[in-house]
Every structure is written in C-alpha cells, then in structure tokens.
Image 1 (cartoon, rainbow, N blue to C red):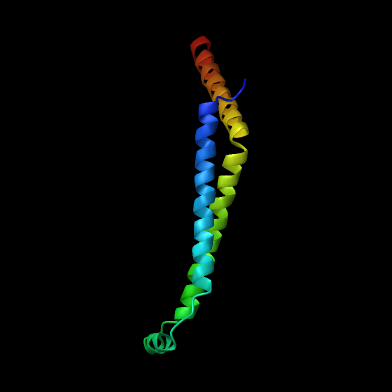
Image 2: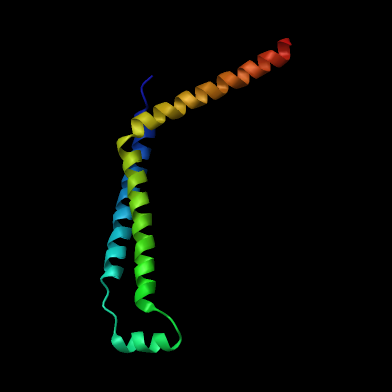
Length: 109
C-alpha cells in the first residue's frame, strides 16, 4: 500500500512552511538578543523597575525555543511525510477493525 502523492505533498508543504517559520522565529530571536539598548531608555525604564535587557533576553530565549520546535516538527513532516501517511493509514485500519470486531461481538453475542 503506497502513500498517495497528494497526501504526502500536503504534509511536505506544511513541513516546509513550518521550517521556514521556525527559521524566521530564530532570526527574530537572534536580532532581539543582539539589540543595542539606548542608555537613556534603559535608565528611564529602571525608574519604573523594568529590566529591559533582561526582558529582551527572555523574549529571545522563548522565541528561539519556539523556532527550534517549529523547525524540528517541520523537518519531521517534510522528510517523513510518506511514513507518516502510512502510519495514519495503519492506525485507521486498526481502528476500523476494532469497531467491526466490537459490532460483531455485540451482534453475535
């Protein structure tokens, strides 16, 4: 049972999109981490107790984690689309067999 090209194509497209979005998030995190901060802005924000460099570092850290996860999931979808479709088909076939077995058990029992 070979996977249809349309279903694998959509998974590959979704995977490629996730990889690209993950790279863009990583680039945004890199840009935020290397952002130079105006000393006057930092001094004014410290008056109201906001650690702006720490805030930017935290945002950059969270964005880099999100970008890495997104790119990883996208790569799995992109490179393993054929296997993923096969696994889905086997799982659906097993679920259908289970439902038929329960029906037969109830009808004959």
